Image (cartoon, rainbow, N blue to C red; front, side, top):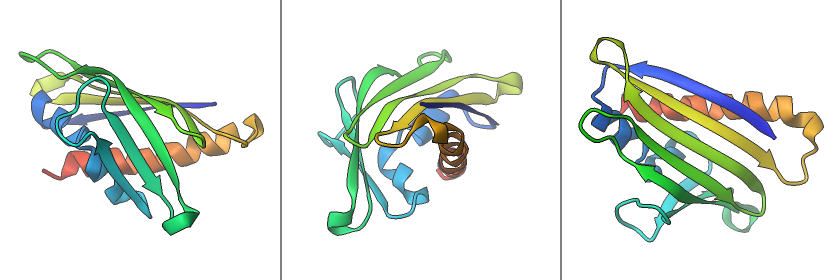
Length: 146
């Protein structure tokens, strides 16, 4: 399994940073050939499934995740979301967190443990580097766009 941590400090209020990083459908915009949807559609809550479909037609696969913790920021306090990957190909979990940062800014943390079934642990370093690059680009994109 590959573990990584991404940290960003942004000039956004907590609520706005939270809204931007938990707009699931926008996550696929930075990952080629990927579409993200929620089941059921509507507001996220514990038990919501977030499904990332990667590939083209029958040559793709689903990366289903379940929201197991949903704690939006309240009254200037931190917010936290945990997704557990429940797929046949991609396993692990991701935690997204927003917390007050210096100078009225917001600190955004993205922690992830990822494993790709049938890929030996020998390749964890390559997986870690590529995941950091892909998810880092995703976080940057989500935080930039309103």
